[in-house]
Amino acid sequence: MSALNRRRLLKGAGATLGALAFAKAIEPVFEFTSNLSGDEFLQKHYRELSPDDLRTVLARLEAETKEKYGADVTIRDIRPQDGVQFGYALNLSTCIGCRRCAEACHVENNHDRKTHQSYIRVFEMQQGSFDMEQGDATYDHPVPQPGRYYMPVQCQQCDNPPCTKVCPVEATWKEKDGIVVVDYNWCIGCRYCEAACPYHARRFNWEAPEISAEEINPNQSYLSNRIRPQGVVEKCTFCLHRTRTGALPACLEACPTGARVFGNLLDPDSEIRWVLENKRVFVLKEELGARPRFFYFFDV
Amino acid sequence: MHALAFSLTALALVGCPQSEDHGAWRAELFTERENEPRIEPTFDETIRTPDRLRGIAAPAPDGGVVRVACFTCHGILQVELSTRAPTPLQPDVLGPHVGLLFDHGTLDCAHCHDPADPSHLRTADARSLPTTEALELCSQCHGLQWTDFQHGAHGGMRGHWDLNAGPRERNHCVDCHDPHRPAFGQYRPMPPPRDRFVPTPPHRANHGADHASDAHGEGPHDVQGEEAQDDEAHDDEAQEETP
Image (tube, rainbow over all chains, first blue to last red):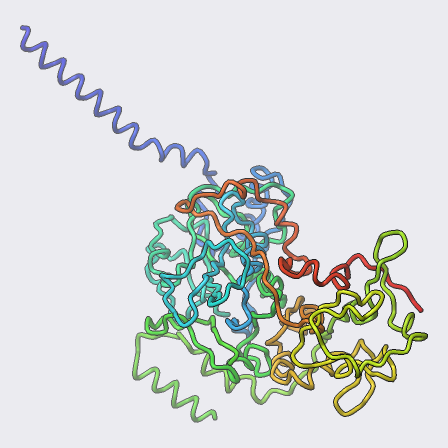
């Protein structure tokens, strides 16, 4: 009789522990779904949304921004222009490493204020070396330092992008004007793309971005600078909410030395075409075959 | 050209059937837009005229700074510019020019300033130029920079890459380079990102909005030459004074 009781007791204790462990293990799922509206859960992929669906989604996102951040924003869906292929070039001879581009990106793209995030990472490099492993992205002393040069790196908008190929859910793709975008509402946060990018250009939102209402840039678009949810990957979009309407990207406008050149690769009169035809441009990590659209050059 | 593009496309199709349309835009580069008529852009590209070109920032009686046109003093005072050799400091220069740092190659004043008319500049071929047209003067020597500038590859700009969508404003040489000391100095950079792996330095812990509002300002803060550039450093606060 006593043996039977002991067995029962052990069984009961085991079952209770197991159930508790299971409940604890699946707890995040319930936390996650409690933050997720039914509409958001049922939303289709960006490219499958009908114009009516899209209007509903944009209105919902605007309302959510108002609710969570207290800011009135306009989220638009801006499509690529015909006959436009974006390209970017950066003059390493004139870049002084002041990080104004990174700061402008931080502000323009509604980045998390706490981590001071930006899509641009400026490396302080040893002159005569191209070893980015030795580059320092967190320097904090007057620039430029003698014997150093400065190399801002952001998304290279590759024509053969390794990041889009590894996405298991097709949440990231290359648009027809050359910009690689992410559907933040379709991304599952697996971070494969972050690992696949040879330029370390993608960022993961470990937490929901912290940003006060008055600092939010209200000019937003679905595929670029709207405030990203927690747990998704984000990246530079060449400020498509600006550039697809003909404006210059925020990082270029902020550059005090004019090291940055942006334009339409299909326009033979554009500044970017002049640079590509008259400067000795190169791309980073060319041997990887990603075919970047972001070109670097030195003046000499 | 079309035949070339066609054969290239054919080659791409035969050679690498899996490559889809990657790089297809490159073939378009030389076919699509080449024969289109050039349309005059709807909007203009303008070049800024910095205040610095319209006179000198001088101390005002009330302790402030006032912008004084060159003619205000030089209408009466005759100066012999060509006799002055360049030195880093010119204690013999009177009035608002005291403390002017001069470090521009082996030039002296008369290389750029018109000795006959101190409110004008003088080109190498002895033409007199208003100071507001300094761009032409600078470009005589700095041809490479001028070429780059003309093609949008030197100097900051704001506005639109597409001049059919909106205007564009370009910086003038003098916006960034002090003509008397044109080399770029050292600047304090914007704060770095705070990765999870990089500890936050204590003095930066409270950073945030102060820098955010500053991002589209005039330019980086010069940490070396703030006192040295005293006659030019107050350009923003200076008021215009007509002679």
